[in-house]
Length: 112
Length: 113
Image 1 (cartoon, each protein chain N blue to C red):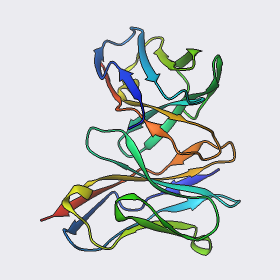
Image 2 (image 1 turned 180 degrees about the vertical axis):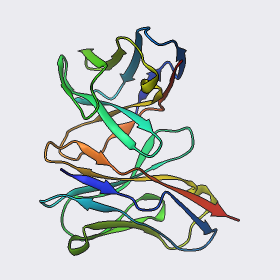
Image 3 (image 1 turned 60 degrees about the horizontal axis):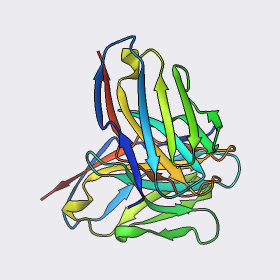
C-alpha cells in the first residue's frame, strides 16, 4: 500500500536560515507528489507538485522541492525562511486510484 | 481563494445525535472530497464525489454517509455521532482527479461529547 512518511513532527529554525522538510513515500510507479501548507486555523494550500519531467520543482512563496526516485524522497526546501512561514506542512502522494495519501505533517516553528 | 464554504464552522454535539456538515462551492468543480484531520494522522479521506449523485468511499468511511444532489453542495452526515468522530473536517474540490490540485475549505471543528 502507498504511504507517506514525514519523519519530523516539529522543526525549529531561525528566521533567515535555510529550511529542509523531509518526505519519503512508498509507491511502485512514478508518483504524483505534492506539498501543501496549512496556516493555523486555516485550510490547506498547495505549495507545489511533481508529476513528471524536471525533478526540481518550484512553488509559491519561494519554496522548491526535489524528487529523488532512488531515495523515494520529495524534500521541501527554502533558502531563507520568514516568520510568516510558520505553519504545518503536509506531503502527499496520489495513489493508484488517484486519491491523495497524506503524511502526518511537520510543524515549522520560526525563532526570531 | 477558491469559493468553498463550510457550515457550520464549529459544532458541539452529544453522542448518538445525527450531525450534517455542509460544503458549498461556487467553482462548478466536478470532484469534491471530505477529509478528517487528527493530530498525528494528517488528513484521511472519508468520502468523495465525482459528480452529482456519484460518490465513493474513502479510507475512513465507517460511520459516515454523504450526498450530492447538486454540483455545488456536498453533505457529510454522521448518523449517530461518537466521541471518536471528534475532529476537524475539511472539504476539498478539484477540477479533475489523477492528482489535480485540491482546493480546501476553512474546516469545521466538531466536538462530540
